[in-house]
Each structure stands twice: as structure tokens, then as C-alpha cells.
Length: 242
Image (tube, rainbow, N blue to C red):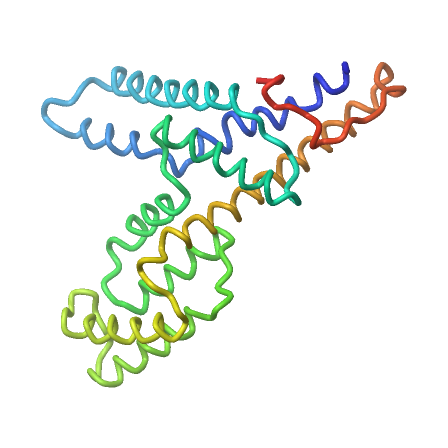
């Protein structure tokens, strides 16, 4: 048991901080405070930093409080374990007031594309964002959208700008045709978001499993643990290490 009591040190830190609270995508409060700092009635710099610190601290403590009560099985190949992990992470986000992955993507997209004037650069930026987040366009939607944009620009005989309401309406109509052809409906968006969260949950469990196995291999090389049997990763209870 001595080996099992130590092997999740790295994985636990990752779960407690990297995957739950302190990811850069969750830095909305920082932007908010930065905006306040520029106002005439802004707090002094030191107070702003303290407020940011306590904001993150409270989120971290809330997240850890949830994780101490929920059982997580590190088994990315078990759909039930993946689903349960996704539910736990959703509970963490709700109680710690964090964004979901879909909300993070939407937020980052709005920030990254805010100053892009034309539709083509906008779509290319969306593709770049998707690639960075490891989202696979299995249906080839991006190529279809680009083809639709080519069609609209050929019709209006100029590059389509995002402030061109008439042109954007034409492009939106083409996108609606694509969605209809692929069977994508707005009312199904919650289902798509749930599927995305499950994929992310599985990827995070795979990373936790990798970290735990690496930690066990490292500990196994130490003299005091050489005779101990390596436990199964899915038998570990992370609550014991938080």
C-alpha cells in the first residue's frame, strides 16, 4: 500500500489544478479585473492581484471539495467510467462557476476573431482553433463551408466582409443547406455538446492513466518498493490522495 499511497502525486496535482481550475481558458475574471483597473475608480494594483488570487483560490477549493466526495475510476476504455467522470467534471464546473469546453471554445473564438473583417479569414481562424483543440472535422464541414463562401463571393463579385449583412445572409442560407444535408439541427446542439464533453472526459482519463502508470514505474525503481505488487490503475481511488 505504500506504493499506492504515493503513485498518484503527479496525477492528483494535474486533476486538482491543470484539468480543473487553473487552465488558461478559465481566466475570465482576470480580464474582468483588468478592465476595472483601467477605470477611474479602479482599485490599486495590489488589491486587484489579491482579488484575482482569492477568486482562483475559491474556485480551486470548491473544485477540490467536489472531488473529495465523488468516485473517479481511471478506466478510459469503460464507457460507464467515462460518463461518470464527465458528470463529476460537470458538477465541478457548475459549483466552481467554470466554463464548459463548448463555452471555452465559443469564448476563445469570439476573442480570436473579434477584429477579423472578412468571412474567409474568419473561417480559416475557426479551422485553426479547431485543430489546436484537437477537434476532428469528420464530416468535412469546413470544406463545404469554404465552397459555399466561394459561391457567395462569386455571386457578389468581391470578398465577403462580415459587416455585409446582405452577403452574410446569403452565406448563412448556404450554411443552412449544408446543415440540412448533413442532418445537423440547432435543437440537437445540446446532444453535440454532450458528445464533445464525453470525448474530452475520455482524453483526460487517458492522460490520468498515463500519469499514474508513469508514477508507478518511477516508484517501482526505488529500493523500498521493489517487492511490492503494482496495483491496477482503475482500482485507485483519487479521493485518498486529495
